Length: 286
Ligand code: ADP
Image 1: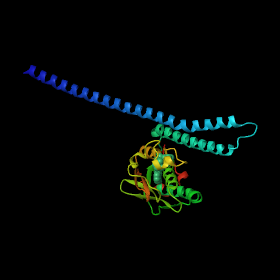
Image 2: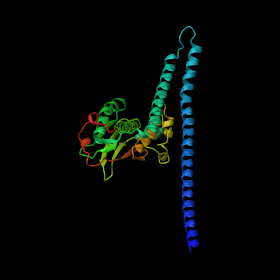
Image 3: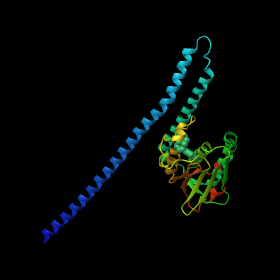
Image 4: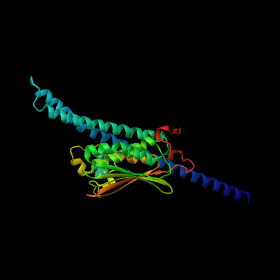
């Protein structure tokens, strides 16, 4: 009888060991898959960054070379036009480098997020107040916000949230023809706050919608335009929002406009200090 017990015990131990081993193998496999995916993403990023940088640098170089070769005693007659192209390419490069830098920092700083109770409607209002006169002067687009009424505080990193709203607003203004409106709204539900940026602009084709959050993706329409952006603005919006525990969504009707929404978690309801305190005066959570 004793012998049978021992065998049963041994069998049980063996089964437990086998189960543990199987779980460990599964974990290692999952980690290997994650690392493989990260490496692949890194390779793709390096490839696309090189590609994106190559074009403006090549353009600059050829204009510089041509100016030097044609500078024969007097400056070439096309100098002013050529300088304009060079300036445009330099501005594009600068924007690209700034976005890449933010993207890289956002990746590294997933650990460094300063999540704190934030008055999202107040933050949106301040951004709109700054952006509205510029949008009107530059594009004849009206930027408005309807964020009156008390809302619970959001749990976000205020400076990253500011970048998210600015990117969405900037896109809305750029893609809305003169006479149009870009509106920022903030509302709350049981679990979070939702910020929407609506525009009455050109809209985005249904087949392009799923891809607009990808790094360097530009819509066909945007690629055709002379002054296209970097294709990084929405990737930043998505990555920053998700790093803060939120999510992004978009709806769009070509020819009618787009609505980008960002959902972020709300702060614990006991801390209502952010509902009233202005941003710079709030103590930062460490
Ligand atoms: P970019 O810096 O090139 O604008 P984004 O990542 O911000 O890059 O946007 C990706 C693509 O989505 C762009 O090609 C742009 O044309 C399109 N897009 C972004 N926002 C809007 C909008 N509000 N209306 C129409 N198209 C938009």
